[in-house]
Image (cartoon, rainbow, N blue to C red; front, side, top):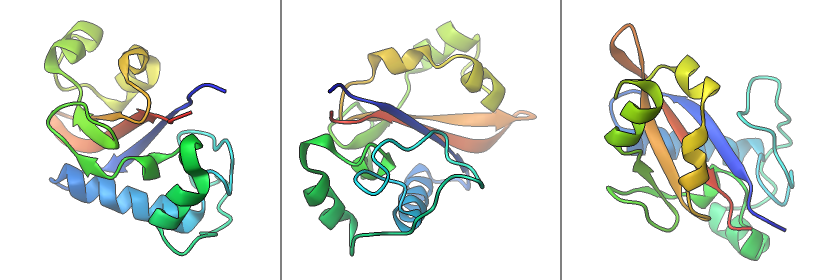
Length: 147
């Protein structure tokens, strides 16, 4: 079938893993994952469908979704320094500099150019700290589904 990209913007409070876990919990509770919503729209917003969790745990979802995965941030459960299966890793500074002319991109820059997604492997993800007025403001998470 082919893998599908997904992406999210989450408030940055100083810890990427905390932001990741907060986002995962919210998306689990909202029910925005395969198989509840087979192909969610990204990024989710206040008007996105929210049927509620249809499983008792993320582990149960992963078992139910099987090789397709959840097609959501639920597929990525930890932060890594390097690209890894089921992990988010920082997008390399050289890539940021090349795409945006800075290592401190804004949300608008990311929304206008997501070419880096072409290099993300199935079942892996990246994160980027986004800046506003020179200060860290959000974390952008993006990944590709398993199938």
